[in-house]
Image (tube, rainbow, N blue to C red):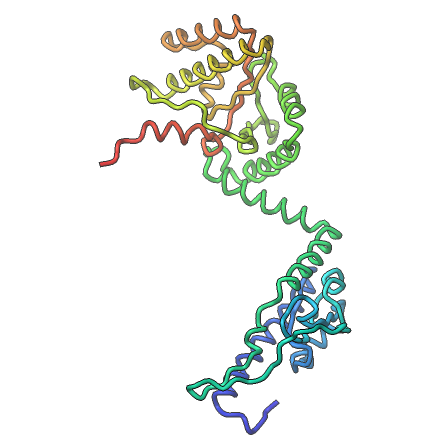
Amino acid sequence: MRFPWLSGEMKARLRKSNAMALRALKRGVTCDGQGKIHTLEHPWNSWLWEMQPAKQLEEGNHVYACSSACCFGGTREKWTALLGNSQQVSLALHQPECPGHGNLRSYEVEERRDGSLYYPTEEEAAYPIQWCEAYAQGLLADFNQNDLMERAYKQCRLQWLHEELGQATERLQREEIHRRACVAIFDLEEDMKQGMERDHLAAMARKASIRGSDLRLYLTDEDTPQELPYPAYRWYWQERLSYAWQASEHINYLEIRAFIAMLKRRIRQIRQTNLHATCYLHVVDSAVTRGAVSKGRSSSPQVNKLFRKICALCLVSETYPLVAWTISRWNFADLASRRRSAPPHV
């Protein structure tokens, strides 16, 4: 306002404050044009509301809400205004008439020993917690009314899947397959809800291949089937068995031996519960292991010895493993195996 009596330091502070206020107001105009929620809080009697961008927002779909801090648990009376395009937030915070509260603190200026002045308004700079809760409730109501929570959740999940698959196999990093794979896995994990585990497993069993021994999730891309990793991260995992290998072998042999160890453990549980003729889901991060276990044979004589043991165990227990493939980042058994195989610390 070009007040001539302001000092040089005060003028500099005023220019910075005005620049910050104008930036917030112009950002509000931009957000309003993009259909985004925007609110701006400032003292009720501030000159900020007289600026041109504030008038422009007021002429649009923005509404004012005014309230005092003491109405939301504050220790002093402090009237603030909030200009925004969220009707729900404004309704949650708008209290134009204060009913009056006892034991409120005053705004007397305190002179300190060094001659400086302390203004108690600094203590009211933070928002009262009840004011924050009311704002959050109004914002949540607005989100639910416009389905913003669901859209934000989907956007965050797709971004997370994008980052995860970006570190997976080279095939899944192809741009078109990568994008469609994220959407397909997101749609699949939406059906994996707590309390509906049996329904999910039954649905996965219906996706088994024609051999009925492995689970394959496909993404059709120009008539070429592209396999998707099973979202194993949706399950709650606990470490039940961890041990070091006695001999060094090829990784495929070791993974098949790990499969046998888990199969034996499951068979012991079946004997205790007397639940025979069961089909269960087993997740591995090796497509070679998944394919070989599903077929029950291999071109390697050494591997075939292990498969004869798997076939015997499955026959005697009437157990039918349904093997699914996932990426290594979603195979939580890797952590235990790497801890056992890590070299000792010096």
